[in-house]
Length: 323
Image (tube, rainbow, N blue to C red; front, side, top):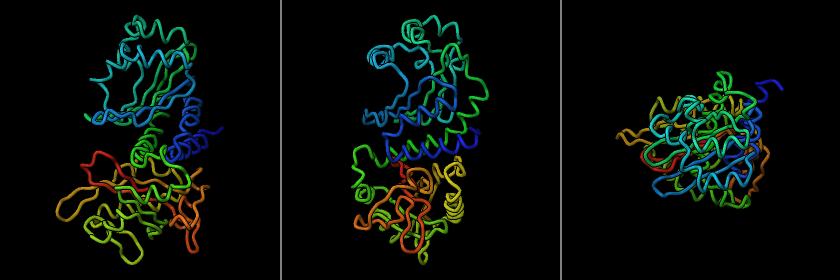
């Protein structure tokens, strides 16, 4: 399959998994194929609450995974070395963290990796702060050699989409929500959520967004269109929303965290997720759930929703997004 087609399909799957966490295993399997890997994992951890927000794996032997969680994770010298080296946005392999001979001499390699035929690992650091960390890692078979610059390039292409999807998942926590109650769940978010079409026309708002629009300090409604009070942020948001029509891949790193500000200097962050691709485009929500039928990219009587906007104060510990 052509790389562009592979990448486009995979990016769409990543965003679908943000709204349906059961899809992450499939995403990891597809990512392994894209990077010639044998298994992979995605994890997100909140230090303040000591909570694992996300822990998904594909391709690992269950018994080995249990032994890793219970013991080998504590003596994994690669993980220990990475603590003082990597930062959010980095794409690293084993050799970036320590010399290969040191890694191969470690107990974690000899007792856990070698028996499984595990060779090199490539990781993208999604988030790394004093209060949270997240990463996606893909492992290659020993016989397939080391991850090269081509693999790094491909992982960098995927990074902004994994990052946005993980941030979105932290906001809505959909693994606790039944699909039939999705509209009510999003309406109940503390973060402001706004569904808009490609022209920025508002199709739906939750209670927090309606309050924000009424105040008009960060976002405001001009006729039926959404506008940011800050001119530069307004231009950026409209550009991102307009490009959502071209699908997930077109956004790249734009929309992960769009800075917003009030005239008084209060700062907010918006995250953008297109609703025009993948399973998000196919999902249906009935009008009785208060969302228009265009929600999840279906039509109402006049237009089709292109994207959703979630907004939060920039010092909030939990992200919000515009999708």
